[in-house]
Length: 212
Image 1 (cartoon, one colour):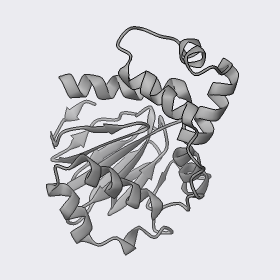
Image 2: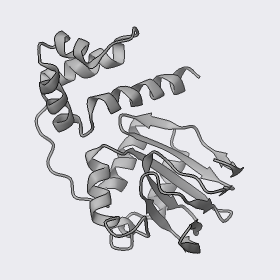
Image 3: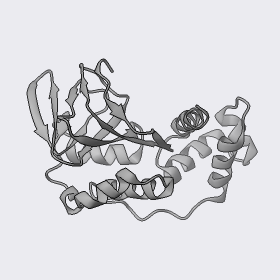
């Protein structure tokens, strides 16, 4: 991202989701290979793309790979990025971005979350608290189906991905848990909400951030 890079918090990364706090941004046109959610803590920020002038928002959702600019307007924002292949992204884009590239989320329940809630997340260093908080935010934007019961084979697959340091392929995971590769891909997407290959990439990013 070119322009004023601003000031950011640590980057928090989970499978399929990353987030950070930022301020003092004024970017040049750029894109993200993820779905982007932005929430202001104090007042508002501004967004602009090729078809619109600078517009003020208290919250916004930006379509994957959409060229845009952001001005933090001397306020503090929470940025959440979701894997483009995740079920959350598909539901969010279907609900808010079917005819737009940027939406203000006014048709969501996000206003039911208090400013105090966001500010508590801002000062928290507990990753579990932050992750639950970010999921609470997403739950106010879309309706989740009740989670399916965990499949022990997928739990073992996730453990393999997290704990294996050497290079491996999806077929290696499938062999480890005694499934065909196609069946593993199907079950993993159903259980976790994102393709297994995307999950592996997210875990590599998480590992790099942990040991940076």
